[in-house]
Length: 172
Image 1 (tube, helix red, strand yellow):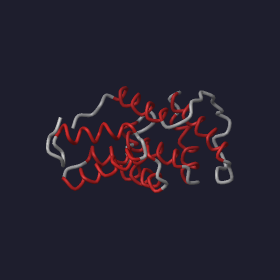
Image 2 (cartoon, rainbow, N blue to C red):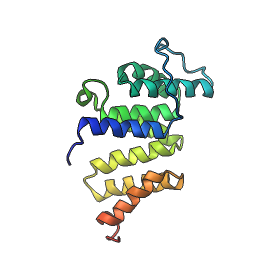
Image 3 (cartoon, one colour):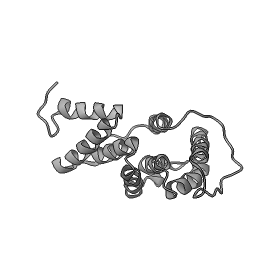
Image 4 (cartoon, rainbow, N blue to C red):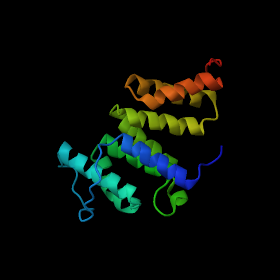
């Protein structure tokens, strides 16, 4: 498999993050040591908006502690984003921060909450690493589950299974 150039990869990650969060560009850098466990859903959404703004400003290292606290508090969006950061790397040394074990862990946590984007992203991670039909089928089942939850990108991946003849016979 060929690696995407880092710039394209970063744009891809930002698109995924933006697609799964509400739109906001406000940044509050003064509160990176946040108590999350007692935050309301509205406050958690505001923190997620802050995380997205930090990521969009190339400040992933500042976003990470906030994201980690939100994820540990059980926020599925944060768990998904944390999984993506570990899957694709973050910060100035992106290649040094890739950790697929942690990525799978956090995506699994969000999957347990039936969060469609995380289910899809876990499918992508498994799909990209698949070396057996069993692994390809595991990814397919995740795409099917995400599609039943109306995650539109999962339909694309299911179509790719037919297009490439993975699991299913080729059928354009």
